[in-house]
Amino acid sequence: MPKAFVLPDLGEGLTEAEIRQVLVREGDVVREDAPLLEVETDKATVEIPSPMAGRIERIHVQPGQTVKVGQVLVEFGDASAPPGRQAADTLDPTRRLAPEPRTVVADGRAKQAAGEAPPRREGPVPATPSTRRLSRELGVDLRAVRGTGPGGRVTDDDVRAAAGGPAPAPTAAEPSTPGAPAGHAPATTARPTPAAPSVARPLARAAGEPPLPRFEQWGPIERQALSHLRRTIAERMTLAATVIPHVTHFDRADITDLDALIRRNLEGGRARGVTLTLTAFLLKAAALALLEHQDFNASLDAAAGELILKRYVHLGVAVATERGLIVPVMRDVDRKSILELARELGALAQRVREGKATLDDLRGGTFTITNIGALGGTGAIPIINYPEVAILGVARAREEAVVREGRIVPRLLLPLSLTFDHRVADGADGARFASAIVRRLEQPDALLLGL
Image (cartoon, rainbow, N blue to C red; front, side):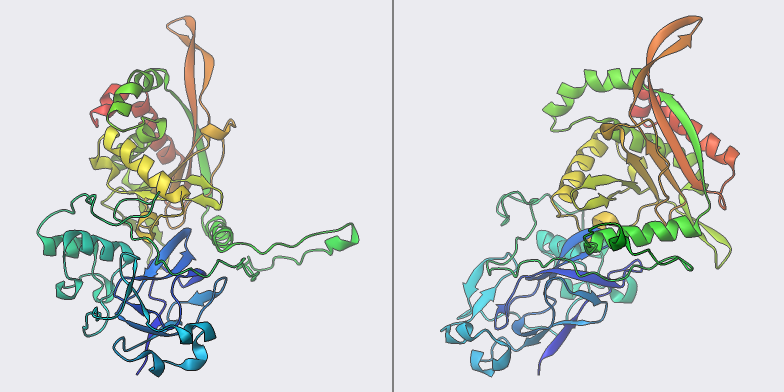
């Protein structure tokens, strides 16, 4: 009897995803964790792995289609059944002539099914793709791990606990795709179905938004469907701007000494495989300031009338990509050194720009930094990344004339804008929090020591 595989719960209120590519074909025999589909959701393009071993009896989705959580994606049959037992009307006629079915293994290489029966077990294990990858790296059988996540989901911590220690670095023996991070399983060698253009769908709009005029009366126009990412950004920004009363505090930090420190240590950092940047110092300064001003490392539960204070510091960093603005998350920033942050930030930004970020890379942020300095401008007022309560905007640093000890001297000044939820904090609170960030940026030696 065929077994249906539905779009799993993606977490954090996500209810839908857009199918970008179908990586298997009807009739394929797949193993557990083999890539099935590539979907785009919540600013990330991720692979959905097979939750079980079996034959693909029927594919219910196609590229460009938007599916809801719980909607059937594919149906599995018994991999040991002969090819003729599968639903003939769902197969490409040319594939019915194939003498032997293909088996797609977890590392993406195609092998013949003969003599390699996929493993059997009772039901799929609920776990994210990144957790499944971690279990393979550590040699942990997910079926033997007790899940502590929502609904019994197996988490990264569960896998590490089962392995008895932290995850090791992937070895050179792991299969990889050119240009892909080590340990990342490439797509199956089957030719994937090409991604289709996005289908236009209505956006969630503010109540009372008036209809648009007929622009055709003034000249020719062209309509373009919004991508899934752009639609997500538009709806999130509308939500944040509608729900949160924004207020912005402006300040400037004298980063003359910090800039000199970065320049002095550029070569030393590169020798260690790290590129020192201002953003790494901004992350550390903000994280330490958040430990002092915890109301800004929080979320507001308006329904309960409670402020949820987070005892962890996971900072989002806005990254501009060809597809739009994406905010990956750096975890436990307060506990890491500047060099660790610089190394992790470089790797994370590269994954995002290459479209290889996972959902785990984009979730769990408590505060966001957006640095537009490389693009120019004198300042900006960013919209808060809901459900966070504050965001730090950074513009381009400029050398200006400053009076110090009665003398006019050139100093490098960095414009900052702290936008926060006025329901959570007052102007004086915002000013003190911004000053705590500025103070650390102006004392780079202490910042290096985590003070």
